[in-house]
Amino acid sequence: MSKDDTGMSGSDDSHMPPAGSAGSNGNKGHDMGYEQGYAQRSRFIHGEMVSPHWDYSHHVVPPMSASATYRLDSGQRGAQGFCQFGTTEAVEQEILIYDRLQEPTSSMLEDRLAEAERAAVGISFATGMAAISAAITSLVTTGQHVIAHKCLYGCTTSLLKNWYPRIGINVSFIDTDNPDELRAAIRPETRVVYLETPVNPTLEIIDLRRMSDVLDEVNAKRPPEERIYSICDNTFATPLCQRPREHGVDVVVHSLTKGIGGFGTDMGGIVLCPLELEPMYKLYRKDFGGSLSPKAAWPPLVYGLPTLPVRMRQMQYNAQKVAEYLSDHPLVAKVRYPGLADNPDHAVARRQMTNFDGAFMPGSLLYFTLKEEPGSNDNAEAMINWTADNSYVITLAVSLGQVKTLIENPSSMTHSALDPEMQAEGGVEPGGIRLSCGLEETNDIIRDLEAALMYVASRKREKV
Image (cartoon, rainbow, N blue to C red; front, top):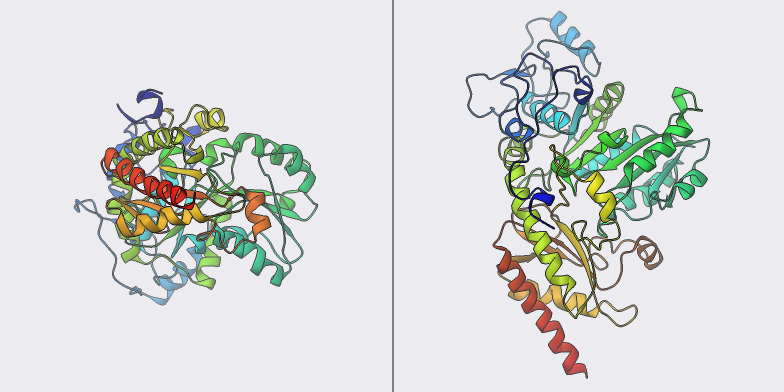
């Protein structure tokens, strides 16, 4: 695969459609008269110079709000602010009341991410799990039903398995990439289909258009109040590599702690959705809390998004080279990386995982499995333990999408809360390792991996 095929050289600049075109999705506040026609990469850096949340046209860097409450000129103005909150009404300037409801810094971040994901609006939250909880819970109630992909981030699975049954919400875990299985799982009370792609940690790719077509068929026969909404966690890909709404998905969620934040310093999450869902999600955030603070919103706004394209280029280049290296290693049973031509989901990934110019962007994550005795996780644990003690550029840590390369063993770490049967059903195998490639020199990452694998090989020889 050439570098041009994966968007790792040349320009990934994509020019925005004119205001009101199909690509703008009628974004509230996104047609306020700022210049059209500039590339998305540039827009990540500059955004709009006059925000409906805050006029900061003379600031080179967006300011950080530092007030938990806001002075009101009159009781009438306060009443007007409360009436405006959580509505779809377009306003020239918001009336700010209290930080938990709305504040300027996170609002600017929401607007910029909504534009990137081709969504009407964004609603930020304190963490990725706060965003995921809000995205699903706002759409279902007692007696209703959620369909979820059979393999998900461990904490999302815990939410669905451990907490929803307590409030009478039923959840079915299926292969959402199988249209027949999806159709069979839908009930009259189904309201949400939830998935990730690439899947955490197996890097399976879900065909979003095929899944969306199934739901469109079902929804065409239902009244609006019984609509099934699709929700996709796009954290692994980031909007630079994939935009699920372009493939028919209703709601997109991200952990801002990961690739969008990029530096591992602040937590955050966001829900990106159609305009009609904004009031409900804002009301949920107001009543349950979990608002993103200005201090946590500022780093992804000022550092994370502006550097995402250049960071992803190097991280993706590293992931491709590491995947190719591991594919040829005698101790590695298999490698899952969308950029490999022999990856099972390569064709779907090429169609779905693209930058704003349509160039293939397979991302910075890969999953590989070491050869083990049946049911054993010994080699994988030995490798990550050796890495923790000896590696210079690879860090044993959860999270992903950071400037540093991170490694973990999902079976014993991030997905250990799943029982062995559910791990097996979801493809989380003993011996599996998730690697999030950072910005280091490519050969240094491979050098540390090679040393770790040599250690595993020496243990095997000792056992013989």
